[in-house]
Amino acid sequence: MKKAIIIGAGIGGIALAIRLQTAGISTIILEKRDKPGGRAYVYKQDGFTFDAGPTVITDPNSIKLLFDLSKNRMENYVDLLPIKPFYRLHWKTGKILNYENNIKDLEKQIAKFNLNDIKGYRLFLEYSKEAFKEGYLSFASKSFLTIKDMLFILPKLIKIQAWKSVYNIVSQFIENDYLKQAFSFNSLFIGGNPFSTSSIYTLIHALEYKWGVWFPRGGVGALINALIKLFQNLGGSIILNSEVISINAHENKANKVYSKNGQIFNADIIASNADLINTYRNLLSQYTFGKKKYINLIKKKMSNSLFIIYFGLSKQYPHLAHHTIFFPSNYKKSIENIFGKNFSTNNISIYLHSPSVTDLSLAPLGCSVFYALIPVPNLDNTSINWSEESVKFKNIVFKYLEKYYIPNLRKRLITQRIFTPNDFQNVLGSYLGSAFSFAPLLTQSAWFRPHNRDKNLTNLYFVGAGTHPGAGIPGVIASANITSEIILNDIIL
Image 1: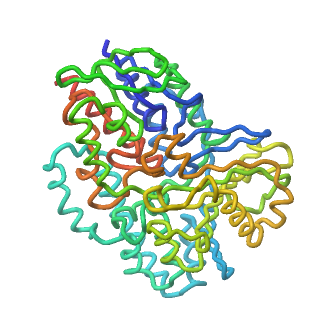
Image 2 (image 1 turned 45 degrees about the vertical axis):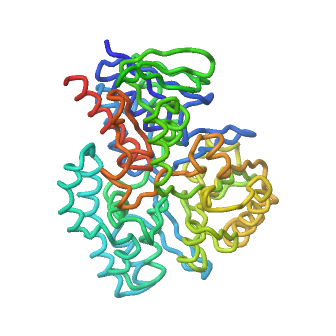
C-alpha cells in the first residue's frame, strides 16, 4: 500500500487526505498545532466558541462529495444550516441592503437605490453565471501543469473579458454607487482588490446565487471535526503537535519528513498544506531548487492581511444578521487603504460575524458570540506596529459598532481576544502575514499560480490557498480535488 504524508490540517489538507485515504493510500496528516483546522481553528474562551477563520460556506456539494466518495452520508456527521439573508450590507448614510438570492426581494431593494439598475443587475447576474461556468465549473476543476492548459482556456478568458477588474465589470451594468459596492465586495473574501482582481471572480456572486450561503451547526469547527472523523473512520491518522521542519529528497523524489519532536516519517507521496512560500523557504531550503523557488515566489504579489476581534456579549441579539458588512464612507479610498502603503484607521470596512443568531449553542445562556474582521495591509505594505496599535484599533472598531449597530457593546463585553497580521505570520506561518496567500490577479491565476505539483520532486504536491485555484473554502477543496487527481494519475503512470 502506498503511503502519503500531508503537512498541515487545514481544510484543503484534510480534504486531500480524505480523497487519498478513500483511494486506498495510507495517509497521515501532521499538524503543528493542538487542533486541526488551520485558518479554521477554534478558540474556546469563557464559555464562548469562536470560529477563528472562514465562516462562509457557498458550495455545500463540494463538502458532501467528500462523504459520498466512501458512501457515507454527510448528514450523519454534520448539519449545514441555510443563512438568510446571505449578508446585510450597511452604510453610514443609513442605507441597508439584504443581499440574497431571492430575485424578487432583491430587485425590490435595488429599485429603492436606483430603478434603472434592476435591468443592469439582471445583465450582471447573467455575466456572473458565465464567469461561474468557466471560472468555477471548468477552470477550478482542471489542473494547470503546462502552458498548453492555459492556451486552451484563453479564448474563454477573452470571451468574459477576464483582463477587466471585478469593479469595472460591475460598473458596466450598474449605475448606483452603493450597488456597485454591493456587487463587487465579494472578491475581498479571497484577498482580492475589487479594482484589480480579475473579473472572473465575479463568479462568487453566481456561486452564492446557485447554492446559497450555509453555516454548520456548532460552528465551522464542527465541520472540521466531522471531516477528521470521516478521515479517521476511513483508516487515516492525524498527529497533532507535530511540526514538520524539513522535507528530505533523494534524487528527484521526496522520501521523508522530519518533525520538530524528532520523529521521521517515510512516504511515497508528500503533500504540503502549509504556506507555500514557507514550504520552500523552511522545509526545502537545504536544496538549491528550494532556494531558487523561494526567491521566485516572493516576487509575486501577496494578498492583504486581516485584523480580527473575537468577543462575547452578555445579551442576545436575534434581530441581527448572521453576516453583516459595514461599508466605509469612501469605498475606493478604503480599498486603497487595504492594498496600499499608507494605512489609516479612519476609513475601514468591517465584516461582523454573529453566529449565535443562527446557533445559540456557541455562547453561554443569554449571551452572544461575535467576531469583527477588518481587512488590513499585509506586513510588507505597512509599518504599523501591531503589538502597540492593536488595542487602539480594537477600540476604534468597538466604538463604530456601538454607534451604528450594537448599543452599549463595551458595557456588555464579557470576553475578547485579538488576532493581528503578526499572528497570521507567527501563528499560522503565513508569509508577510498574508491571509489569503497570493493575490487573485489574472497574472497569478490558473497556470500562472503555483502549480499543484513541484517540478523538481515528482512526488511532492501542494494543496490549499497558495496553489491553484486559490483561497476560500470552495477554492481549497477544489485544490484538494485537483491535487488528488494528479497524484492518482501519477501512481497509475
